[in-house]
Amino acid sequence: MATEKVTAANFGDVVLKSTTPVLVDFWAEWCGPCRAVAPILEEISNEYSGKIKIVKLNTDEEGTIAMKYGINSIPTMNVFVGGQVVKSIVGARPKPALVRELAEYLG
Image 1: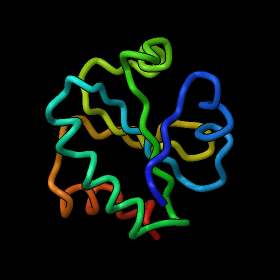
Image 2: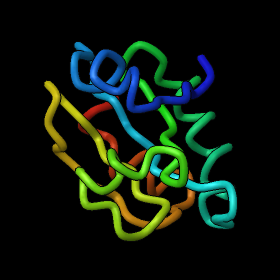
Image 3: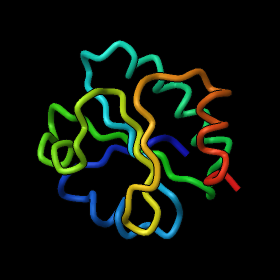
């Protein structure tokens, strides 16, 4: 399953009401580290399909949501469980490090 794009219009349904953990990748087109981590998140999304949902939120297009969650630096990856942020990962990481940080949500 490919990573899905979220916007202010569908954030509530896709992220806050999800019954599985959701990792929101706060990113922007101009951000090099964001582009570097994107294929890694895509791989994790495919490998752990059904256990965690990975979505992307463009901070340039959806600044109000980024501000609401205090996103000051990108990439920031927030894990939501039951509509609440339970983990925040700031900065790009290699795949093994990301999988380790997300282990408790990957089942």
